[in-house]
Image 1 (cartoon, rainbow, N blue to C red):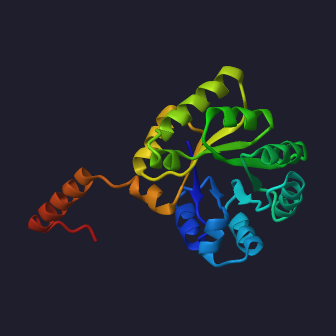
Image 2 (image 1 turned 180 degrees about the horizontal axis):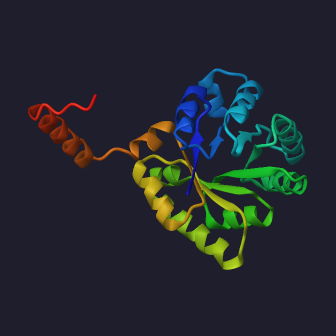
Image 3 (image 1 turned 45 degrees about the horizontal axis):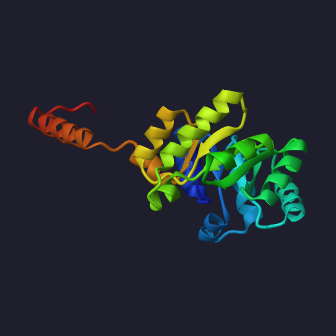
Length: 217
């Protein structure tokens, strides 16, 4: 499973990229606001930093305006994936931008029917939001499984980009289901390394090494 980092924080992206943990980046207006940077400026910097897809989201609500904004964003770099919402207008924009040869990430997906429409419209990525479904007592992982089944049934090439990852458990469960990509905040990716037994074992090794006066350097 590929890892996309869900942030516009350059330092956080750089740290994970240096470890080979970054296959792409996703941003949205909320993350751009949090960064305090101009959208075109920070997106260009991210695209120069990573070689994989960088999702940059349109803010328009009408199809023609989304298409114009998407084409503007695509001028930033060749690895831009234009991010559009899963509305009827967004699907229209997806079809046009995909026909232009651009990568398109259709976001805010909350049902299998929506994911099926996005695939038919030529989406490169579909972004089902796991955590936000969990927030309203619907198992978001069930949606990932349903989309995987539908796409496999008919050979759709649209990649499942599991989004709204809230925990390390979300990451491993999406990997088991067969999501192509998971996008998560840096803190969630780092949390995947944590285990209480690792901490316990390391503490014992350190204690024993001190008692044995073990030195390597």
